Length: 411
Image (cartoon, rainbow, N blue to C red; front, top):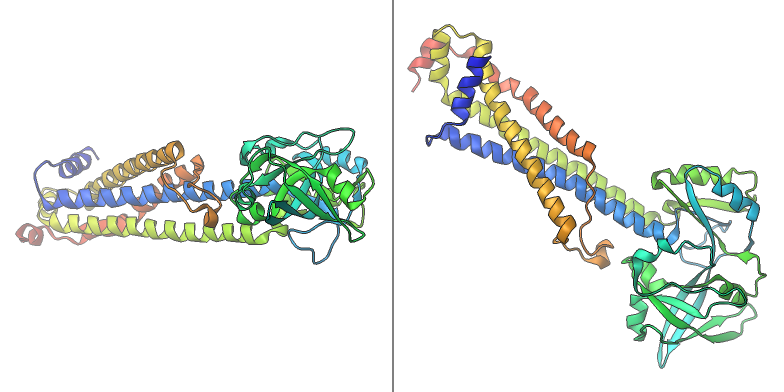
């Protein structure tokens, strides 16, 4: 083994200009690029899926509980239900659930001067955890609730602010259609401006006081549109939605649905990225393997005279094979280590500077998000090394067919 290792290192690290040296460097570079691309692809897809999902969950919750309404649209008003304290307490005790908040929505029209814009006002009460919306707040603050009446404050999106030419502390007039068909105007103060980056939400929603929605709908003090539930692990949404639905305190006429079922188009799109990621990884792995096999075949053919001399001196087939396997291991390990270092360096640079920019209107993010999952990095490194060494056994078998006399005469 020491002899085979010594010969392999002499060939691999030969400083003389030779075709072997060029092939070894080319193969190492190809392995580097393949490993780097696989690691970067995994981190970018993980980051993108998580960032977009978190945007949706932060704005809508993970599980939605409300009156069962067959055929209801994604952005529409809810049928009123009575607040159920017993259900709230039962939901909070379910392992994996972080919080539960009542909400309601109401269609309205915002106007200032001659500019008007339709909006769906989403109302919360003072129990709402404002940290969910904090990442979206571009300017201002969250609304302040009052115990005696309703808050006359509103948070609008940057899209609406631009359309209506509104800024903080402006007081647009908002029009609501009451249940009896009459139109009620009110004046609200803009205290915050948010941006989710998801066009459907930014064009549709504004944030207000739940008590305002109750007053406009002529609801009782305990009536709400439903509940938004936040959980710790979004991958358990379906299971937790089912668990909430089966609680003894859960009303039969209500429904509990994961947000992935309410807005399937976004999450179906994110799942397609998994297919694209897998295809790219397969292609890069195939490129790396084909390149290494080709490299080893060329190295074996170029060193036929050396093989013949070694065999004539009494070297076994396995010993000569080990020379080329050691050489292949040097190429593979060097390429993997350099590729991993390059990938992690690029990902760190993206996290620090965000130099890869995206069209937020199309991708919901203004820069590529990064999430490094270390077991995936380990799998890429270990898998590439193992598969490469197994596949490289095939061309090394050429050594067994080499006859010393013919090999020594080979020009």
